[in-house]
Image (spheres, rainbow, N blue to C red):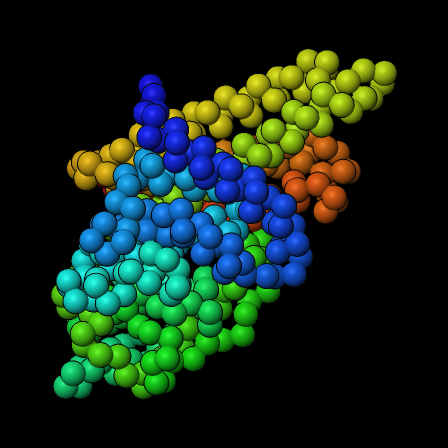
Amino acid sequence: MFELNDEQIAFQDVAQAFARDHLSPHAAQWDAEGFFPVGTMRKAAALGFAGLYVREDVDGSNLTRLDASLIFEAMSYGCTSTAAFMSIHNMSSWMIDTFGSDEIRTRLLPKLCTMEKIASYCLTEPGSGSDAAALRTKAVRDGDYYILNGSKAFISGAGISDIYLTMVRTGEEGSAGISCLAIEKDTPGLSFGKPEEKLGWRSQPTGAVIFENAKVPVANLVGTEGQGFKIAMAGLDGGRINIASCSLGTAQSALDHALDYMRQRKQFGRKLQEFQALQFKIADMATELEAARLMVRQAATKVEAKTPDASRWSAMAKRFATDVGFDVVNQALQLHGGYGYLRDFPLERNLRDVRVHQILEGTNEIMRVIIARDLFG
């Protein structure tokens, strides 16, 4: 059983208030216009939400994974897409803080923690999605620089972000030949593809990041050569908790809308809340959502403690919470009938936004692979 302490309840209250005042009123418009709310995210950063588990010496908040989960769940209640981008920014900043040298930490993280500079995470390529260790983007050492050639696909923040935390091949085939570079937007030879037209997550840009003889200083290496895949996977353990938390918040919002609708809507002379079949549906939705929430919080404590089974728990929580989240939103839309299909209600946007959570940070099929491998040893 998880009992939140007073400090965690305070974090949750602040995040819920921020979502209510700054995210919920604008989420539909941002979605319709494809607007990236940088100004609003900087307001969140002023509350400490852009460097959640970055150390305090570089202006981070130094919170726990459970603290962060509570904050992302609360923010996604207001706008799934914006909360999810904040989670990516935080994951990237954490990797720099955890594996970067003191020089690169001091140089990059203070501005990332205020979101004066914005970070993106670049792992996926056109030819390597689930098979991340097969990435082809090549970095060849040339004196004090790496020369990069290749491209990354489906990158949130592409063309807007200032720092691209990028996994590149500096050595042999397979995971041992992968390194991590923090690449700045003004790097010669760096360009971006056209913004992708997406089903959901429309309040954040997504596109290709392209390297054509891009010249990146060796000083921007995060960790050591050959450590990149380990860094990427460590980041994803936390990223999976975050995206699961975003599913929880979105699903809770959808469930609350369904409850309000059922209290008011009448059919056959009775309110919907009086039909036992619909009561059973709501009961199952609430039960599944609460079970998912407990699993996510357990996984967050394990990732924070670096337990031997942390990666498995992170994968289990991500798989379960994102599947439950989508199902709860879908059922909430169904309970609204035809109204749920209209943009007058947030359900259709919730559905579009939460669907990608079953794909990114490792597909839910890959989560099953991770879980099974750990169980079999």
